[in-house]
Image (cartoon, rainbow, N blue to C red; front, top):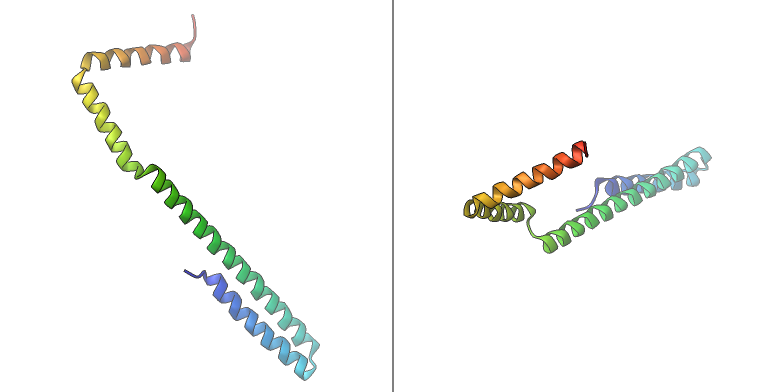
Length: 114
């Protein structure tokens, strides 16, 4: 997908080149300079559009690579949640003891030694 800045930049560049050429042809330095300025402005805008396209493409590639590497994160979280739920249902006493131990450690870390 082409960024709109690239299209607008090309139009400005062509318009500026035409204005500069016309200014040169009729001997109008003001039109010539203004046309060259618009032409340069269009080239800068095209470069900006190209940079945006490159960043957009790079972000897409990174996202694709992450998806290939890690899979669907929501699916992964659901699977791990199901595994934890099954473990708690299978061993409720162990789950309560682990939760109590974690609570004790957190309390100790938060309040310190008294």
